[in-house]
Length: 209
Image (cartoon, rainbow, N blue to C red; front, side, top):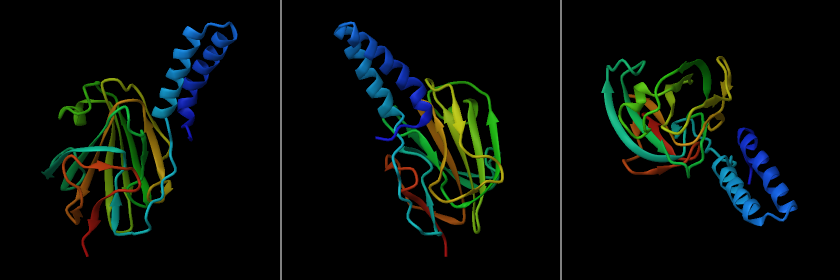
């Protein structure tokens, strides 16, 4: 199992402590520490994903459950008339985010904020988040990586002007979180409420012909 390098900062020290405890014969200490390290490694797992080669598709930027599909119209929270799709990531989901389309990173904006539960409506605007705007050949896509009540950090793997391929890793959100993607009116929505999605693999929209 591949583990994101950010996770190794948590996992390795605990494994060292567990090994030391076992070395002293303190199995009642080393055992729980070892199990905890395995759970952290599972949370920070970074599986290989194979994104289908189809320029008409827009893929999920995150693993999780679709908790909202909302028509925003001319809403100030989106740079264009859009449908907002909200994906909730539990602690059991992979927390690596991925590019929903191929394109150029036009902007990355970090917004400090609060840490409400990520499944609440207020989280989209009030929680700390990192916004990414990608300019594709036919469609621009805007999405937010939003921290939750436990998460306190979002790390980006990309920078402005980077050329991305669909499904490329864009960042990691620590612990429970949410991702909102704003889909322009020029696409057909392909998902429904309650659906489970996988970053870089599940098509959530398709460009209209």
